Amino acid sequence: MTNGKNAGAWAAENAAGTFSGTGAAIGYGEDGREVSYPHVGRLRQDRHEELVAWSIEGGILQAGIAHKASGGKGRIRVNFLKMAGGTMRTMRGILDGTRLPGGGNMIHAVTMGAGLPTEEDAEICANAGVYLDPIISSVMALQVLLKRSFKKWHGRYDDLIGAVVYEDPWLAGGHNGITSREDPETPKEPYERVKDLRDFMNENGMNKVAIIMAGGVWHLRDWEHWLDNPDIGPIAFQFGTRDLLTQESPISDEWKHLLLSVKKGDVVLNKFSPTGFHSSAFRNGMIDDLYGNIERQVSFATTRNETMTHCLGGSGTPENKYYVSPEDTVKIKAWTAGGFAIPLRTPDDTLIFVTRDRASEIRQHRNECVGCLASCALSSWCQNPETKYVTGKRPDPRAYCIRKGLIGAIQGRDLDKQLIFMGHNAYMAADDPLYRSDNGTASVPTVKQLVECLLTGN
Image 1 (cartoon, one colour):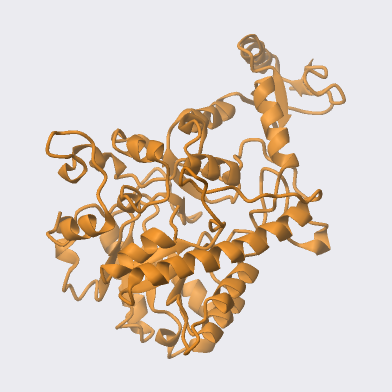
Image 2: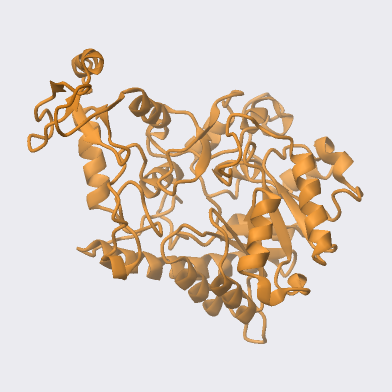
């Protein structure tokens, strides 16, 4: 959701601007909107290879745009979704293609989240002379990372890590690193978590490495007690949702207008992402439908037993026979009467009931899969040729197609049916005077105007 134009604008203000290296745009249409990758491959692995090639091309293009727009100021960073398909190959291609003739790189740092970087990721960044800044959501994640992947840099972690991005799992938009030990429904205040993170970093010689607080940051005045605080140490702040509401942001005008109408509670933490991670998104019709799938869900058996006594026959899937309990039969009849007549089997040996159109859409998404993730719950794709590019698990119809949802949102196509990532404090835009002109109408500032406002504490 970021590109070279807005990353360069942030750098030009002596900040760090970040563009997305995962599915980076290769061009824009006459309307200024990002064009989709023109996939032509017949097989899924062919389309995956196309995806990697275009991602490298797009990443190099966006880095060049950012480098030029920065005017030599600030820092340019590229973000990769670790769970994305072909991440290491894409990262290596972009970093190799953005080296400067006199030495150095257009890019100063790689940030990586939705999965921990590997030793190979670290080597790629080290060879390119750029920092690898991990995105973590707990001190435990950094402990694992230093022990597992960055152990070669023991005692000199600051040679590789320029900053540690703490992305709060209950405040940030997009994918969140909530662990199995944490309750998604019980938010924890970030101060103590970041304090623990700083203590661990200090123990490992990272006293001067900054922590970047990401998630929930709207006004800097709200974080004044973090500044010059020995518990927190060197600190910086990341603006994700606020960056969406800038003139340089590549998201559609429809998305920007939606942001100005978000209410408190409209952003929900859910686990519908095909990555398997929790994520935070605007609750629109698409997310409501996914919650509906969970509500229209029953257990089943493939053979009759003492509990599962009623046969559904082959409704929607004639080759299968599903046996359910008498109690669930009553529910199923009501769902069928409401148009949710197609049963789809999940990996958990349950059935969800969807409309015929939704079943067709899921089938289309699977057929058009391009391998945008290293492994995908919705399509059972994985990028490992040794397993013939499949996970070996049953596809999960309760997940969404992340590629289709995000591209549709960026291009502004019927936002009620797209994936709208945003932070939980997005509702604050509605009452923020920065987004109102003198006559009270909605107004979207430039990055420069936003930075000037932020530096006042607002």
